[in-house]
Image 1 (cartoon, rainbow, N blue to C red):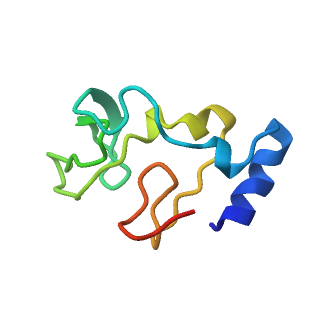
Image 2: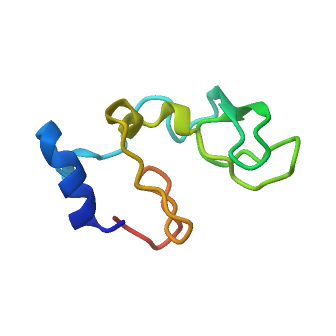
Length: 94
């Protein structure tokens, strides 16, 4: 999803992608959250920095989607190529 597509999704909420500066307490820290692994569906405890691997299936970097601020608006801009706004692949921007 590119910045234009994300802006289109956010428009009904009166927001733009510029409003999504991910400076939320807890993100990018070692605080933990309870998450369902999207790969093996096991419930696991992960850190909110996006760097936890699933202890059950070994999948790398299970993201803390349940804590994502976009989920409050029922929006997810994750793609396999770029990941998402909160945790983009290195060198990728929305």
